[in-house]
Amino acid sequence: MLQLWRKPHTMVISPEGVILNSGSKISRLVDMQLSLSNKPALWTQVLTEFEENPISVAVTSPIRVIISNHYVRYAVLPWQTGIYSQQDWQSLAENHLRSVYGNVVDGWKISVAMQGYGKPLLISAIDHTLLARLQDMASQYHWTIDVIEPALFSVVNHYRHKIKKEAWLMMVEPQRSVLAEIINDVIVQFTVAFPPESQEKTASVNLVKRALKSQHKTDSVLIAIFGESQLLVDFNMENITLAPLSANKNTENTLTMGLMLSELT
Image 1 (tube, rainbow, N blue to C red):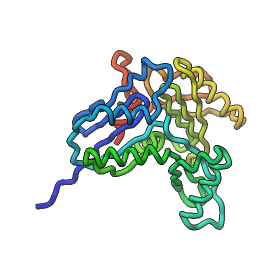
Image 2: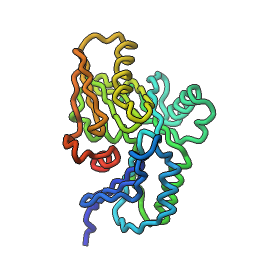
Image 3: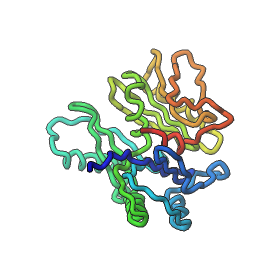
Image 4: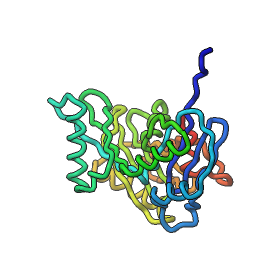
């Protein structure tokens, strides 16, 4: 008898805790009560809370893990002619991040994703120790991790048919805003802001203003925006058009970023 295909569960690791979406039910495995904190929880705090409060969760399907932007570094690597092997691109990506962050990159798992021949490559970096802890959790609870995705890439993949070829993508979550510029379906630049609590809207506006100024853009810009309702901002600028990606419009029952990410397929 053939085994039925099983859809992967989705687990989100973020400052608000650990959330598991089985497809029929969403469970908070760890709740860090982010709204009561002055700063986001480190991933070490989140996973330590998970390990100190064992929860028996029967998961028979593979797990797709989404990592919050809080725990990922992003960069764009320009295309270079004469580079053919994945290992060469990997070395270039590591050298690029080392030139920006220094030797701390030795503790990161750096991944490179191509966007097409002749187009910039995307770099994402996650702490090696975070990935190791996730594998330990998987062994402890007898889970199979199917894939680990940075949150920004999960949003891009999910909404790839909705985001215009010429647009900016903004993700806004508590104390973190990420702005990605997209040209001809290709991400060409990232900008990140780290606002203090309750300053997310101001930081998002300033992030866009700086991007417009640095690129000397005067024509209209479409911004596809994804984030918690109470953090989203109306730019009130003549050359800015907003295209919300989430249908979360009920301010009385606002979804958190972790819950929104857990619903991405």
